[in-house]
Length: 244
Image (cartoon, rainbow, N blue to C red):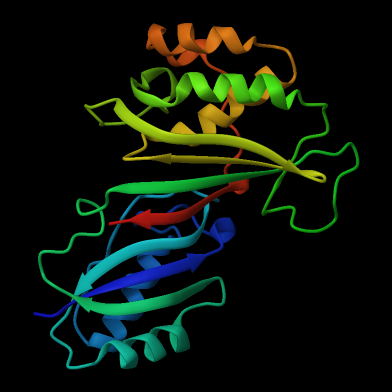
């Protein structure tokens, strides 16, 4: 049975995350409905990562298997013709049946966007966090460096998770400013539930002076979610890339 790899872009605003949930619109559910319609059999789609409600993707990766006799090009045209405007397939290719969107992934890159200006913007309110406070980027950069490496990220893990391994290897964590926009980027071999949003929320506390950059190592060592900062809202977060 042929297996196909999808690269997806989606606006997460109108979805309750990636994963199928009863009676709620999700990216996975929408995609499976369309694929099943084209294939004329029930289809299951597996992604590289289960994005939360409101989180966006520039290049989410997923795979599905089917008995339908369609080429990759035919699948691409059919799916983009039937999917809603806020989900688009950017690339589609047939892959060996040993490929797994989640378990074959080597690393993921996330980006968090902040509109750092006192006056709010009337545009892109669901795509970028408005943060009207001054930020000390130098302090935030120091804090970022303390989080790079292989650590137990329990202090930055969201509640209600069944994950048994809290150790992740963060290879890059940066913060940069471009005019009114502040951008965080985080790359790691894996991420815990809400880990990026919890890191961003903590770094914003450092930027405002509510936490000192030197406290980050202690927050990591505590392995206690209550020691870190608040969870940043979902709508500023993007899954940018998955490497295999």
